Length: 324
Image 1 (cartoon, rainbow, N blue to C red):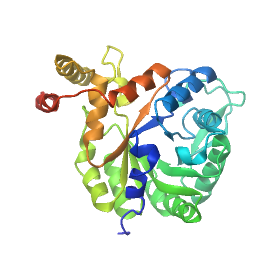
Image 2 (cartoon, helix red, strand yellow):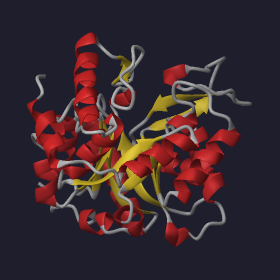
Image 3 (spheres, rainbow, N blue to C red):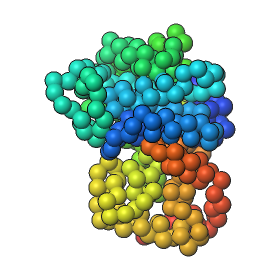
Image 4 (cartoon, one colour):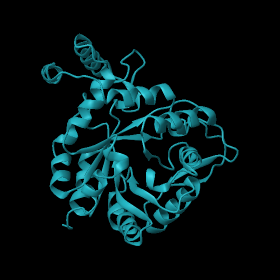
């Protein structure tokens, strides 16, 4: 086993995280589920900045580079010490043979269509980060994460991780980690690598708290910061309507019923369901910050506003006692 992570406490104390505890999630402005114009993306990023958010999470995967380009354009000219950027490695972007709009859930026409190729090799990691820096208009990123290596765990451990560790030693990245939906696989990596942070998506929410079982205690012991994404479980905890998504697909009836029970409990206290969903995630001592995606200024303003919502302690007891 390697030594405990070195950068977790420092990352948690970073002004971009410590002040607001929110990270802007860049998937929606990359066109996740629906097209987002350049103007709408810029307005949403401006609203996040005006709300005090100074940390931005993105990836080549999000709109085949579109999210990175938009965030890079928005941050250009702003003092580098005032913001934090996280991007990811594991998917290289290559020219596509034909029309790919809507591929893997992302929409938005490109002059030169691109497609994603999984590559967790050392060369792939170095090339991916070099291309990300170009799109982001930066000479370094604050956090680089191995992205969704579920089916490539051995290569992630033997090639991607050492490559990122070398880049961290060189100062090209400040902190390294992994971003996945699987809490179990993230724990596997934390046990074997000197990671500074992890981004776990959808596994510590009002509907799924599985990350609390093994991942969070391990991160606390080893000094690894946790960024919690998917706090609304793909939207169902923002609005549990009939077409609500859960884990990137239409919500099953049983899950939809649970979300609506949670909504009704929150309503009895005058608390919006998404406010409770966000604050629930941030209550855990392992969680450094929550990653919240938004495609409109109204969405990100609402998310920032939930930080100051008055939530009685009794609400958490009632939610914990609700039938599964």
